[in-house]
Image 1: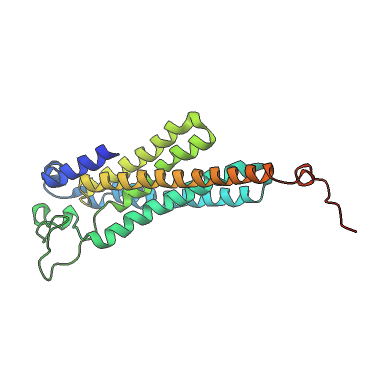
Image 2: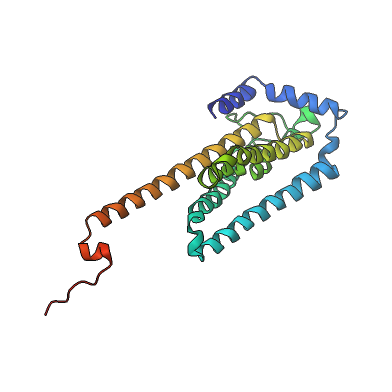
Length: 239
């Protein structure tokens, strides 16, 4: 993940973002031709977002079901971690977007817009409208599902790489389609991927650390319990 962050920083600092966006823009005839394209806007952007939301609701429904079925109790924590991780990752990306104040490529004069480029830590001219394009929000609807790696690690370890591939694949698809539309630079997507992975890692570490602590306390309680409690026999009643 440090490689992703380093690459994103290099792209932003050395203006490699613009170099890559220049090629996408030129390839479309120096217009963001795909901005309102049916595939990129309707199928990948709108429908993709809705399907990601529907998937999260499906996980929520599954978690509710396993909460009511004692025989499925082993699925509760993995599903809960998946729910929290995907929700938190998208929320964190949205929160950073709310104050980062960076523009989309389509807003910039270089790409047919009406604003000068201002870097992440640059001072915006007085009167310039706020930018709300960093990091990439739509890509988070895909990259957040990298948490499937940890879900599968806890439930079906052999599937963990397939789970990771789902999240990475969706993130790349959502992110690149938005770059084709002029909505984001490449570094925006890399930062979103990093935030999503670190969130999944943190939720997994906290969730299973808490589980280990609970199990340890339960073992300790069983070890120090009176013999009657350990065997399930009734305590004698004092006369």
